[in-house]
Image (cartoon, rainbow, N blue to C red; front, side, top):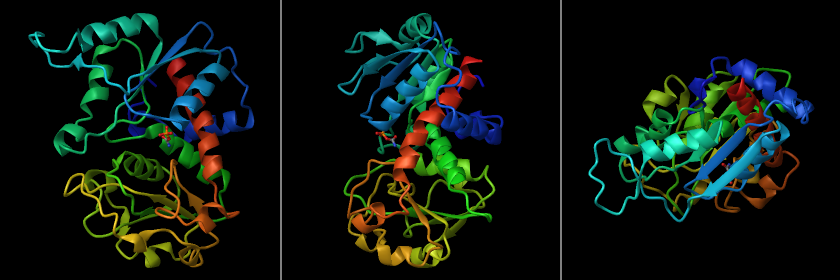
Length: 312
Ligand code: CP
């Protein structure tokens, strides 16, 4: 694998999942695979899980890991042939060139602006890094995707696999802030490569990018969607059509224990961080059916699998 910018970069999802599952069972295997190799992580946005899990994954493979916190900003120039007489002190060409001399894999987190759909869906920043670096680039959540999360989510579903083809529901939930569509997009792309029945449910006006949803069943009635679900993945996303718009007032979409009663003893999933009693009721996330901590732990094994492939 040359890069991991989207779920589609994994030529064989099932193989990658097997590899992640291998690291789940053998977390300290391949401890020398990344010896004398360096992973550089760049974060334009805050992170707990992605930052730590990818660092742990790199270290378990024997890599040196360096993390740059860019949350206070880093004004790189991205335009070709720019006359750099403004406030941008460095061009992506040199920055990426230098980082390519220092590191063997470069991970990048750069969220959506939620101002300009076309710009966000070009995934400009991560694609500029991919264009100008000479080493593999790893998506630590970009404007439109979070493929490391998607692999961990798929691994978690496999870990709790029932003895039948599972029904997986991705449900929208309210949130006080406008959030990107990245997690939902990559989750759908991951599930499309799995043997599951996927249903996406959300209020009207919150349809995701049709190019990503494709033929996946969409149900606007959340209660109907939840019937007999084996897994319920709850996530807020802002509107794709009315780009960046939110609906925090739709509190009837909060996932409650009463709603979970309609499921097939459904497992509750969320990528975290989560707003308790806004996105999900305490009774659900604190129940025995909540697998959010498995999901978070599986971020390590997903990152190990991807890093191992990028190191090959
Ligand atoms: N799920 C996830 O990506 O968490 P962080 O934002 O803490 O990295």
